[in-house]
Length: 144
Image 1 (tube, rainbow, N blue to C red):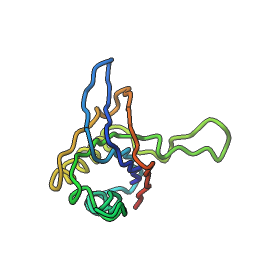
Image 2 (cartoon, rainbow, N blue to C red; image 1 turned 120 degrees about the vertical axis):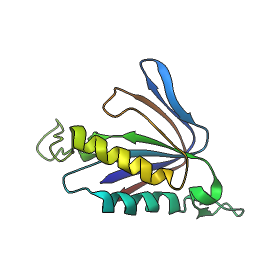
Image 3 (cartoon, rainbow, N blue to C red; image 1 turned 60 degrees about the vertical axis):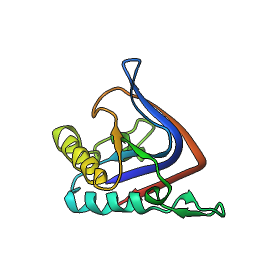
Image 4 (cartoon, helix red, strand yellow; image 1 turned 180 degrees about the vertical axis):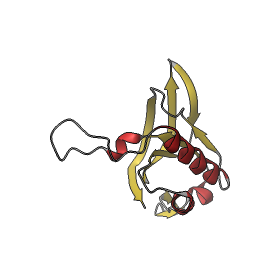
């Protein structure tokens, strides 16, 4: 499981030229799954995301989690996080988990996050336009 975490002051996901979901402040998560991912990894990384201290405290030091700082999460399924370009310029996505199994894990991940904080999502497998206003910029990769 691989997650690209971005601190954002606003973000949205547009599907078929309509805003499907948006947040004003919080985290945008691009989430990918691979063979061997399971509920234990999901629980571990969901907890890691919500406790990641990348928001500023009163001294402008990144010392607060989203739970301390406030905001929401916009979670987007992103199989291309497992792109492999080692054999040329055309990426291979063989390592990306696809279909029903990936969707099931994505839904479980979002349910796990919901135990801590409000989560909004895109639509698994849809062609989405994701707009992210990244603060910092702050971008962290989590993997397990």
